[in-house]
Picture 1 (cartoon, one colour):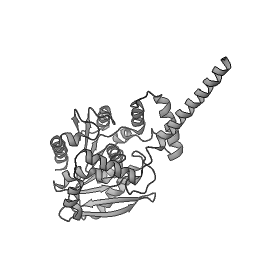
Picture 2 (tube, rainbow, N blue to C red):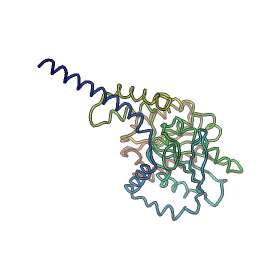
Picture 3 (cartoon, rainbow, N blue to C red):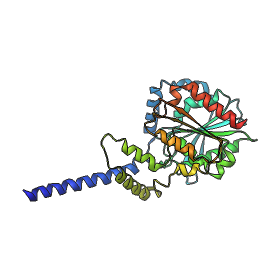
Picture 4 (cartoon, one colour):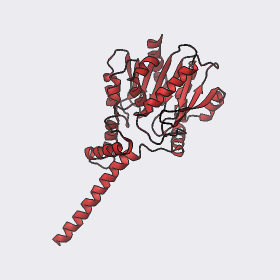
Length: 315
């Protein structure tokens, strides 16, 4: 009887270890893999849930959209969608960077906000999302390089100096935060807006594990996911640190975050704000919005905060 118990216990132990290792591997593998079909489905669900009429946007702006492909440093293609106001490149321009599991169309509602203010808007599909041909998502690690290339592309279209800003949501915000600490951003970006961003890949993965319905060994799974990520993609969770990049940020920056954000908790917005070493920064807080919902819950407050910030630092 005792031997049977020991045998069963050993089998259970091995199964548990295998499951934990498998989950650790999946924590690295699954978030980094996207498909066009999946991102299209997620964006449709999102815009339908928000009762946003994408066909109305297309009718208004389709003839103003110029589509192009940029080749990134590592050879993948970045689809770019340049929406021109008054058929001129020489206007104030905003780059909108979408969130994880979506594509450029997820930013149409905010694009419309800027278009109505006379801005040109540039959208693009991030790594491994939509029609971007990169194989993996890196939570800002390589996405910041794609953003730099897009900004170079915009500058190449202009014939004189114009204001260029960037607004991103969730991983898009983290990408902008990561990029904002570079010398390139200091030279070419006039302002940054980070909506619902996370502080680091390590912190975000840890938060997601803690949010599981079934309690899980957070530290162990994070460590295993980190090892898998390093082996699969060549960088660790801790290397993807938006906080460290923000300490080098030299451009006016607005942080937008909600206290009820259930994906990138509010403390992350506060830490991003505190990491910025200069005083050309603002933070706007929404009290009752879930992740990515501040814009929808109070468009008036969102719009006023964004353009008050931009006007304060670009006029």
